[in-house]
Image 1 (cartoon, helix red, strand yellow):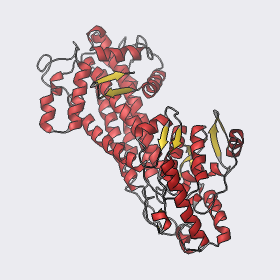
Image 2 (tube, one colour):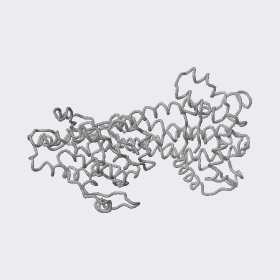
Image 3 (cartoon, one colour):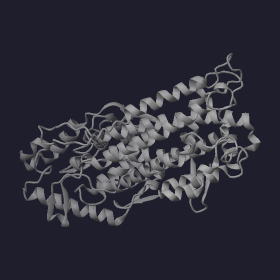
Image 4 (cartoon, helix red, strand yellow):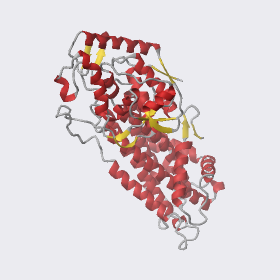
Length: 506
């Protein structure tokens, strides 16, 4: 069980909760902070103070004072009116992550919600009641208002949820679970929706998947090296230490480990003096992508423990300050950076695919066909990979360079961070399928060279993948093979065990 305290949630714990279904608990210290901040809100209402979002309207209506008897209705109207999400829903895993991150933020004790609200969010996670949240409609400042409003609807018994393997009305799910809808009180609606948890939840899922794919890309590239009789000298540690980037050094080291004992790789001058860049520069290109992924990992980890609503309550309610922590710019830039990094892993993978299938670039059978001319083999698989990397180039255009004013020009600069996160997810999905194509082609190539000559580690990968996709001895519907292998890559995973300093194939 993962204990939440509002300040120490890690990406590994997010994975355990959102991927592995682990339950959560609430630390007593965080609950004390929640209780203290709630007292501050109740005092503000009782003393008729003018505080944004508690006794005033929202956005452009911040100068409209709300009567004490209407502050509860204010929160209800806020949630309903802001639930303007559009399009297909986020994956259920992302929805679960949104609930987790919103709960963790409220536990910091700066938001002024009641204990019943955080306990209900905790119950939703532990009973796997996941809101159905449309994925489009957020500007990424004032936070993810539309997506988080669909999350907040569940607490009041409105909207829809995933529960017990079905999509059903929230009210029905709450009844089955034995809960009553919550009547939101002063500030609680605003505290639930004013934040970056949609883009950050999507970003957390993105970085976890991207890191896994980056490791997988190294395994697959190593097998391609064998299929193309690549030159191992390019991975000599002296080359990479001479440049100094740790990520580049580490990628080269992992490739050397993966290829240790291989009789298929060659030495400089044995067959040729130098390989093409897509082989020779694997550490430089993959290493640069790892630099970006490390940056993204850090920023998502910070945001997962951030107070991102407005206003925030400090010093036991003596200081209530309106600010802009809801602005998603840090995550928007990180997601755009990730898009480029992941797209580059697909770009270089597709170039390796071309070298595997093009008879002018290797001595392998043309297009790895079992009967060149009569059968096309992997010819159109390369087309498909090329299409995906081209699509990635469009998706990689930075969303964060755009802004459009909203709320009567009060909110005149926005991040578009949620758009960046959604596009990053699509690029990651495209990369996985490009890598599936490379893996299919690499397996055909090493069969031609002799599987017994592979390194022990790449042979292990080969054996695992041949259980998913059989050898190409005749043309077939390769779309099915690509999808099966992409699913296997997503569900099986690879780990780099740093304590043992070796790669482990699950």
